[in-house]
Length: 310
Image 1: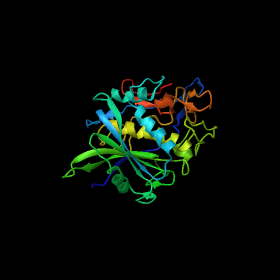
Image 2: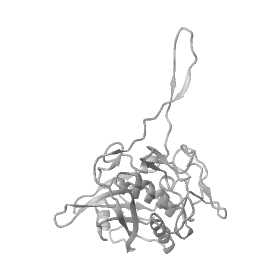
Image 3: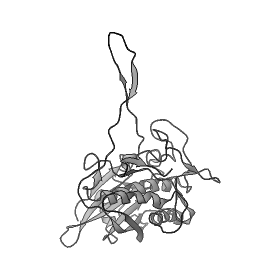
Image 4: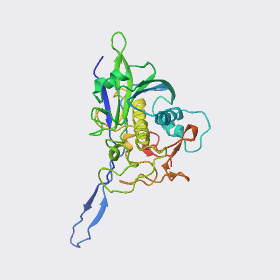
């Protein structure tokens, strides 16, 4: 089994850059404060294969998850390509943005699930161990996702990342590439880093946190991060798809839009969102079984801009 290759991401506030523009002349024109125009956000296509067509997402549950926690995540996966009627805006309408990338749409189906509640590889996981776990389920036309509980620490989790996607090699001659990912529950280890805006951020303005739509800060945070790695996995599965910047740390479909959840967002403010009338929870997407989720913005190749649902 080859060493895994990962695309890491971290959810952190975005910062605007401004500078002082000074014009000098004999008439002593006043100084003008102006915003530096940022470079256009363009995710370049690097001519590699993307994951398109019918795709299965298999789940490997590592550690302790309650049935309710599992149902929240399972419902999210089933909502990505659900044909059942859902209120607008929906999780499936968010996922449809990936269809604008080269090759057309990708339809997600929930596949097999594997529970490892005994921590068979311990509670500190290396990238190679994550690959071992991801390899426990079939990988043809699939993304195998390792979900780690709040008391498990995958490599670099909370230090520099909230989750990652990568690829491994399979087959008799180890020449078949397959995509996989992992996401950790940040509730106990780094909620301010990987569950914002449901927790006060580690740095920056300490604004009041939002109420999580499913009443579970850790799992609702996992949903945001799971959405990020899944979008990255289908649009840049083998480091040759859509990204901006270096191969091993470039911006991808959702990580390019970090901190943006609704219109009018700015550093420390996620944007205008919907609110549940009974609980006051914040969300921007409806899923199956009347679930509500908060999903990050995704870069839309049709407009070359980050697109939000609300």
